Length: 448
Ligand code: PLP
Image 1 (spheres, rainbow, N blue to C red):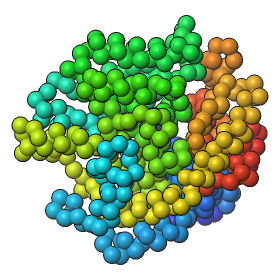
Image 2 (image 1 turned 180 degrees about the vertical axis):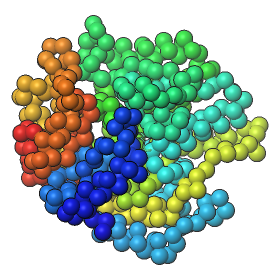
Image 3 (image 1 turned 90 degrees about the vertical axis):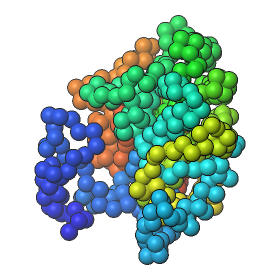
Image 4 (image 1 turned 90 degrees about the horizontal axis):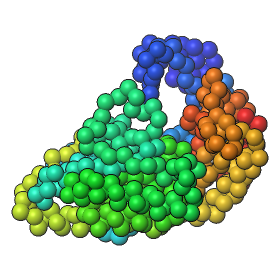
């Protein structure tokens, strides 16, 4: 049996410990780390091995946007597998891939009318970075390859995408292409550099950006990569006007602005894409994944400005090849699922997010009454509860065991899954969540 019922759990844990390498394993714990077994899901809920029902607070990994057990998506997945389970994107194409490309091209901001499909977020970011390298090689600017990234960022687990990561601990034991990356300050209004007021923070960040261009030279910088809202860094919402000003600087200095919307696209902020609609910034490339299929099939991609393709076409090297492609690029099942997922988003779910998000945030904000909570911040249906040692210093609360994990453990006993992040708890539930379910979530979180 694969459903993990009863004492089958012990057997499965043993199999996993012996054979299954889980993401982010710690050297000394490989082989004896128990991760909770999830048996099933329905709507905003999942069921654990004991049959307990838990609200899926993080929607898996920010991805189960339409909720679990969505029959429409399951049916499309099955039907497409029976019609055409796979075709090689090297020599052929499928109807769902062409139709989805056209639809996304219409939904993406500005002239981002071309899409390259990948298998997830890391491969989307990796594709964008390799595209930037190719683009500058073809234009005869082989030195224009540096990538600007920021502290607190998370962009993936492939070599180059991971080199951009700026969260504590991500890089401690891992190598990266450090010679290609320049790190900027995290635009976190709650943790500003000393002496910088909230009002002056945007100017400070923009000045740092300009100074960095000055220091390294615009002719050596190929791209700036940034999440509109840093997700895994702790739901960092940048100050107003920051992204449009950074986008304008990128345009001025011929630096590609890559907006990593792996989390923020497909409804999380109430829009299909958030860069322009929510933050007023026009990127050259948008990367996406996760919510595009609500996690029902691994799919990601990048939307690319037609202006860039036009330049490539008119270059001195119209025969140069972007030697980049994945066996599962444009997977017909993923594209078919994404089409139906978009139907569901456009058929009321985006409106629902915009309508319910203020309630979600106002209810979570009440947790700021708790002494250990320093700040609750959020936008759309993503939020973070940050625990601090004291309210003046904002120093993160540290205990013998990680605070987020302890809160998560308590909450799981009470019926809620939390995404623990060191001293923070992140909430990004399925977009279908109701007011009553938000009340239940916040009540448990408070008690936890
Ligand atoms: N970019 C962002 C902003 C992410 O949050 C993530 C994953 O959480 C990724 C990229 C990597 O995506 P994936 O895990 O699908 O490779």
